[in-house]
Image 1 (cartoon, helix red, strand yellow):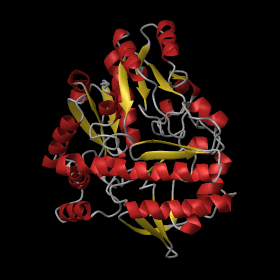
Image 2 (cartoon, helix red, strand yellow; image 1 turned 180 degrees about the vertical axis):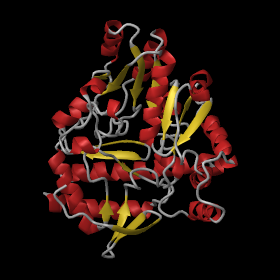
Image 3 (cartoon, rainbow, N blue to C red; image 1 turned 45 degrees about the vertical axis):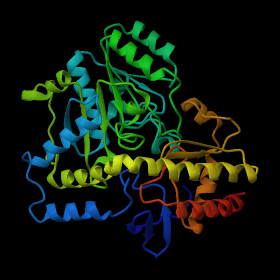
Length: 401
């Protein structure tokens, strides 16, 4: 990012410290998993207790079953679930399962949506690749890319045309219901509902990649927020509370294709005992006191975003702040809103963002260093953190200018 990298030494709640002793308010949260903040006592104690009785067994454990029940209860579209170790594995497994279940090969994704670094999904992807001006990856065979159709986000009519042109060939449509790897933007009204209808009528599966949004924007993720049920869901990040835990699940008849080796899904650390103990402790906190955690993160985020909007207007900067609950991104643009990947690439001044975010560091704030990747508010952030952040942002805007 044209700045000096820093190396983290430790973290606690909403703060991190680098090896030189500098303290930062952290709005990255390990790129999403640290929903409770860093080193939450309840998770650390759960991991410590589990570790004293063994680290890894490769055998089913009671916590794995308990976590499966919890996820199925929280996410109504999920009837059966498998544990993995990352969001990439979850999305990759959903694709393999969809192809096997439908006996079709082609996949539809959307420009700028990032689903991990599996070969078939690195076509017009967002995330870090977009930061460096390379929205696809070297090393992906063209034969893989040929089976992936990437469409503009929010264009339902084009999806209908693609289904007609590829009759009985499309296995699944995979989407980030709230794209968060090319800035942060949202589905237009009824867009997700149309995807659901088109997939159903064409006997294709709808896959929601809720690695970022799952257990963050609502207890049941974006599908609860928008009231749309996918056939399969990929989960990650928040589940493990900082440990590498992911999951994928969906309708029972689809998930049953995994039985007896029909669709292979192996992994030494899938459903790992340590990960399951951390996951249970982490998710239990989120549902305490009638889901008060979600209300807190939404409240703190709204306070921060409102303050940033007022600050940008006061400073006369052409910029907007888009957010949904605890997910937010500042985008330097003269447009009233960014609605898709093309808007982001064409209208967002990424150099201005980079200049601003690097200017935040000396004032003790660590926000996402990429204009393509959002920042997050965690349960550990307070109103005092917001006030300190707004003071730092005011100084950083002056310094960047």
